[in-house]
Image (tube, rainbow, N blue to C red; front, top):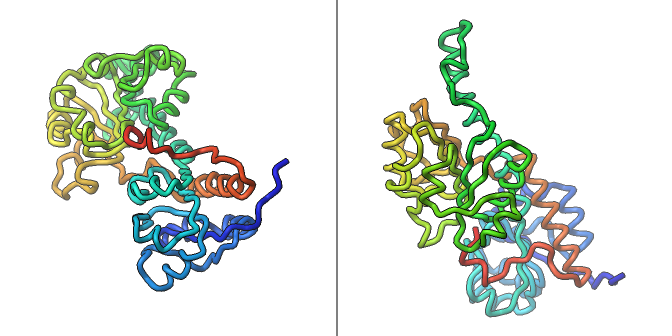
Length: 339
């Protein structure tokens, strides 16, 4: 068995609120056993004298939401820095090219954050196909016995088609959760082969076929220059009437005005945990549409789920302390096509 190394000097780098919410007393106790950590020091700015002093001896940064960019000046102040463990998903907002040039080992808790997003997505897919929100609304308004089979003849999940846009970490998890159900799962991802899609439990198709034949399309692609507006007016127009678009990725991937037109017209349904802009204007018709369910970016880890992020990150810290490679590394060669 590999013997533990001497405790490395670690520094927390995130918003103070993030540290309070993600790292509870139990998590901090575990971290202080593994590392030389001042649990009361949380850096959200690398330029202050206190930050510069802390960075001088830091071997490990434990980052989270609200972390400042780890740019060249920050790295110049941290000559001993060897690794960064991120307690959330994407590292795009704080990992810079200078980190890769330094050769830092970087880990992310994206796999842990994918779990609640996939659970949210699964629930919304099943509810959308079952027309639960429509039926509940009608029942609340009418308060009488109705033949729901007659009113919603297409409702249900048996042999329905679900399209997954991107085999990202979350997209793959969604496919995994969908496998036990009697659904036809389609996938579009330009970086996945037909055989790989089949192994996941999906059938690889071009985007035009995915949108034209799916009862529900769920968006899981990262926001990149080439994916901005990927879900275009043209693709939305090909979706079957009554189909549902679910977006838990980034709002800008979808042509928001085009989707709004389709939803307000009553042709499509939308379940949107993210929008463009992030908070829709107060007069957006989507808020009041019976065909839209808008949630305020809550699909990811929230409240009691944050402990899963901490547990994964602490597991990575322990691997680092024991001289073992990260189980959830972030690699620069795939960062350009991942969340």
